[in-house]
Image (cartoon, rainbow, N blue to C red; front, side, top):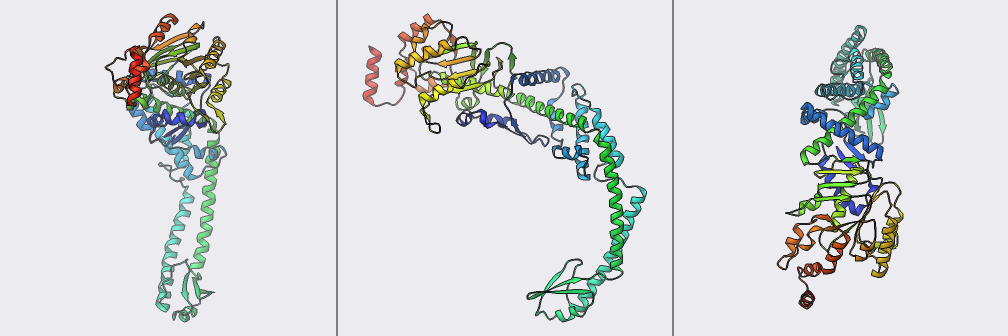
Length: 521
């Protein structure tokens, strides 16, 4: 099974940068029943049912001690029969369809036995009913139709004729070779050159038909008695046998037709259950968690990670954060992980939107109708918008439904004076929103606003003169803590963290000297 996201939902640059593809690879399996699945973004009601079902199944598996690996291994044996369902519905099932249907019924019954304590909420008896019809008309392995006594006689008669035909044809082919030196195999024609010395001998035989084709002759054997009469007899018996088998097949299709709706529903439930097993097995193998959906507009994350970043960093601090409805503002100096916080949140909420588990110790949230992330950019060439215009468009696409919006360095896309005014205007306008809005900023003027929740990067004060760039980066994304506007204003006033960070880079000597002078002032 290969999983994909509906592409239009996630911007391509974010899909690549955050490595959603790598995360989806965790779910790849050799399932035949679900070889490929394009996940669609869910709405709230769908997500609530989806996660409630998964939590319930996870709890039942644990409570009853059911071996998930054994279940999954049996799921690998289930064939995909989606292709035959239209034939099933329209009563056009052929023998090879019935073989695949019977194989599914057989392997599914083994899975049903293992699921005795966690049965599907469906009439599994429909499978036994279908199995009864199949075994009534098919051989035990479902490979062919059972023959009546008359059909067996017809089949034996055809076999006898075939043996005689083979013998007579062999005699004729040997005679042709003996008289002409030409090796013929009935019923296939043979070509020989017009200059071939064997041509004259071939023309003398009445049971060879010759047709001139340019510089060659095409030779074919004309059936003679008893071959011709035996061929005719064989054709008559074969038509009679096929007609009888066709009647049996039609009868079986009629019997099965009443089973279609129940089976079609069961098959959909079976595929859903198999997919649920894949999700729960991937959770087990990769230490993922199912999120909990809340009726409140919140995001409560404990030990959330961004897998792509965790792979690169030897020391990685998972993210703990609590967000409330309305405006949330995150302060912090450069290179303290503010943008990584936004990316981590976006990554997790997108996974929830598509019904997947998350790489966190726990995640509780109100289901977001929209999840959007805006990072600083120089604009969009395709749309012709500048960075400032692209940022404004981000707000134009917001909805009144409870959603989650993350934006990096709010209105740093314009000059500082107007950036401050715009920031205050937008944050005041979003204060009574039903959504969660989280932005990062350096503007201290934001502290004058009421009804906003403030956070800062907890470790932004830990930068010491002896620290180096590697030790700084090792702790990204750093920890977050809520803070009052008074405490934050005091910190922002005395912070020289950006100057210290700048000294960790191999800058030109004159610039480094100037920065050190600024630190001493």
